[in-house]
Length: 318
Image (cartoon, rainbow, N blue to C red; front, side):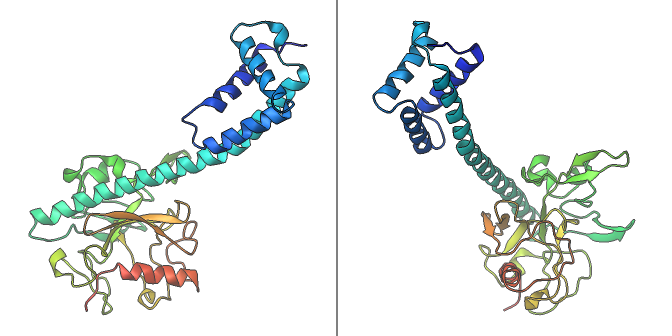
């Protein structure tokens, strides 16, 4: 019999802990891997005895009962298999947690947005886009200022009309949004905003109105859809987000034409949207939305269906 090195024994010890850890996210897989380990070590009861001998040795028992070198190599191979099984599952769990955090952020923004009309005679938070310095940006008065693709300072968030209702700059960005702003010195900094508001809600500009899709100033003036179906905050794609308002371009109301802003699908083909009744959900998109620029053509099939789903949440006359 040959004893293992200290590092090898540590690996075995970690494997044993994994096998009996109750909070493992996928216990069925772990149990199956443990049975595979026992079979590889000679099957029951021989494999079970070898596992017990290893545990005895790790607790300070007789070194003569440790694994042979071949047995040790088998254990290391099983650990590699376990890692290959568990790591993708852990990545999926992390992605789900980030989706939940994104929903929480956009819901908090929605609550702040709903408080504003209560203090302003049902007038909704405005957004004021202007073209200046070669880019679109929002100026005061607006629920948030600036351009999401250019801002790294919190100033434009803090000067926005919603900030007094929720003084938490972190809720303006999705934790899964890894997009950056390239600085003048060549460095990159994380963006601070991932969400935009429905463009037809109190825009301070002369956007084109094409019935039945009109522009509204007061929340109580909107005839359709009902608050539970009226989209307010929209998680936008990293390449198309810029101003505070979700932009619609010509032809979009026909399910064709051009996307202005695209919704994000960074959560496993889903993106966060909040509604005027205060709830939020992850919308499943059928077509790819990330890595597409604003102004991209509405493509056939799945892209048209997604555009029509967005139009369902846009304010309109009867």
